[in-house]
Structures are given as C-alpha cells and as structure tokens.
Length: 538
View 1 (cartoon, rainbow, N blue to C red):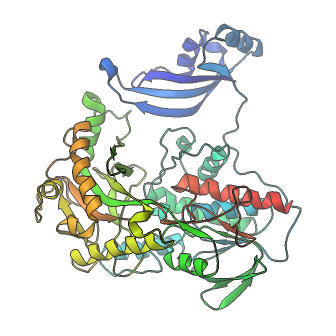
View 2: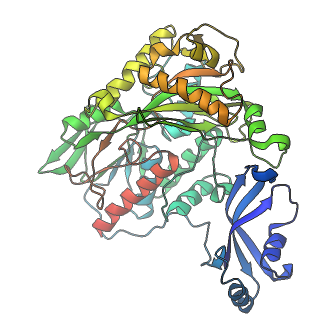
C-alpha cells in the first residue's frame, strides 16, 4: 500500500478520491485498485484567501506491485508518500483463550467506556467477567433522565452520571483522544460493529451522538453476554475485602459478598461514595487538578459563519465547532473551551440531591440549531487544600450554591454575557433560548463560582471575542455550573501492571481513576487494563 499524507482537496471538488490519488501519484486511474480513507479533517483557515479544504491521509492500493515500487522510487524524496502495510479496519479487539482461569470470574465495576471495554476484552479471551453497574440499563436510564428533565423528580440512582454506558452516553459522543495507542483502531471497529457509522474510522473529529450511543452500548452489552459474561444493574459495590494485601471479595449493595481475586474498577468521575469507600479501605489515592466553569450557547449558524464565511450552509461541510484557549501567566491559570457540542443542548447532569450540574449533549445529526461549549477554568490542588477528597468537597460546594441560587428545584442559574461582564443580573434578552431543562433562573453567576473562576472568565471572554467576532455578544447565555469535566482525584496504580500499589488484583482504570479524559481514552484504558491482567495470567 502507498500512503498519501497531507493530501489537500478543495472541499467542493467533485472528482473521486481514486482519480485524485492517481493524479497525485502521476498514474492513469486504471492503476488504482482502491483507496482507503485513514483520516479526514476540515481545514477552514483562510490564509491569503485559500479555500476551505479537506485534508486526507489515504492508503492507496495499486493493481500492479511492480508499479508500486516504481512509484515509491519516483517519490522517494517526498515525505508525504511512503509504503505501509495493508490495514484491516474491520478487525475488532483480538481474542483467544487465557491459559489461566481462577476459581472466581474477574469482576468489572462500572459499565462506562472503561468497564465496557475491559469486560469485552476479558470475554473475548474466554474469562466470562461479571459486570456490576450501580445504575440502570440504558433504556430505563433514558426514561429516568427524561422524567428529570421534564421536572418530574431527580433520581440519584439513575441519571446522566450513573448507568449503562456511563456519563458519555448522554454527551456529544466524541471519539477524539490525544492518546496515541495502536489499539485505537480496534476500539473504533468495535463501535462500528455495534452500530456506529463507519466514518468514525477515519474522521479527524469523529462523534456518534447520544441518540446512537444508547443502542451501541446496549449492543456491546449483548456481545459480552453472548461470550459468556454477565451484567447486573443496580448493583453498587459498597465495600471490598482485602487480606494480605490481596483482593478477596467485593460487597454489593451492603449485603452480598462476591468472592474474586481480580476486579477492574471503572467507577467514573462522579462516584463520590465509592471514592470514600476505597480510601477507607486503604487504596492509595492522590488529589489532582480539574476545572470548573459554565456552558455558553450561541446560534449554530453564527459559529458556522465564523468558521466557513461565504461557504456557510454548504451541505458538504459539517456543522462547525471551535477550540479556544486563554492563559494568564500571572495567575498561572487557563480558561478554555471544552467538550464543544455543535447543534446540541445543555443538559442537567446532577448525581446528588441538592446540587446543580450542567453538561453538553448532541445527537448524531447535530441539528438543534444551537452550539454550546463549556468554558472552564483550571482548579489547582492547593485551591482545595491538597486533600485527597478535597476536590469533591470543592465541587459539591459550588453545585449546592448553584442549586440554591436558582431556586432549589434543579433549575440552573443563567446569565447573559453582557450582564456578567457589566456586573449586573436579571436580563433575559437571550441571543438564543437557554436549552437547559428542567428550566433556568436569571441570576448572578458570580455568586455560584469561585472568584478566581469569574475573574478568569471576565478576562477570557473579550479575548475570545477577538478570535471569534461576536462570541462575547451581550445576549449570549451562560449556564452554571459545570464541575464534572474530569476526576478530582487519582487512584494510584503501577505503570506496568495497572494494579493498585496497595491491593494486588485491584485494577483502577478509566476517567474515574484519573487515567483518561473522554470516551475513547477511557475505552482504551479499559482494554489495556484487561490486557495487563491477561499478560500476567498467562
């Protein structure tokens, strides 16, 4: 195969990729046997009036091996053209039969991306894992969340944070990651097998959308069961038994003892009671930085126009997103956009009674007409006293203030950018209707965020407005508070074995353990944790 890297094509070029690849390789089209898209990105930068382009990485197969050698020799000085092995993009997570099976099956705690893919990897290798998820199955969970969003009561057992698929199921379904792991293609292939669109295999910023994710996580569950695994919902692990530094059992719902020598804990970043239980059980944990802030909403058409200019509305172009960063060296803090959701909505994401938490979500088509993104400010460990669970108390403090400020009924506090920057509150002249359900109250966000956060937001908004003219429009609406962007602590593990340094057989993994940041990196960490165990077992 010949790989073409940095292959730029004007976005509205109607020629086939086969013909374009032939032209680039200076070959007649009949020599092209096939083209596989490895990566596709949008370059909307208008440097010197350049048009919007699609930037590809292509793997090109020729009909003649001798011709391939000639082409490679002809372009041997071109670093964007080189030889690669043919890749099977349909291959999922590899399986086999483990040579060692203990007296008890391995237990997987939590059925978010890390737990799901750890369980799938174990099942593929014949180990029949038992999955214990504190929340409900995705269909029941979806019904519970809709009731909450419609104002019919909050359920701390079943919400955006807890249940089948984890917090990512009710998000934009982004599959981007900064992790460069060779297993990434296998994980993406598993998503496709479970019903995801095939373009996630090559898009630079792939996403699935919460509407598709709900069926995908259910299909992965059924595959684990087909392979011999078991999945139990409303089974919260409330304790662990340790003897001689080794795991002996987990306790479920305060009463059932399940013997096991191996447990994979993918608990998610909001399992605050589980963090406390593990700390009391002697697990080594440490505080870690995170970030808090607000969600900001704009009309999607405004973001599209800012990105695409006169080409806005062209059906060949995806809905636009953005990424913004502001740093204050004196304060040694940053403010940045996070989890930007084109064509989505702001959602109620509380997991505890008496607190307001917001997040962003999109369906696959991203067609709500409203763009939203978190604007977050860095929280350092010294901001909460460097205590292991101090970050949780810090988050809870501001979530409860938001709850009280907005009326105590799970409405969210909102404020226009104009009011926020001018030190006033109460305006409802919104640029776009706030999408948060079950409702909002126009108040002063300065009262439910730390002063260092509101100060950074006040400095960052005008700066972002210089990057995207109109971003700090007086009527742009900000919703508070977003506090759950990442875990506030880390469960320490050995870098090579993936096991806890304190308890043998205990594998902390994923975003909740402090080793991932999103669906894809959490899934990869689940696979790698299971593979670390399989390597030791064999």
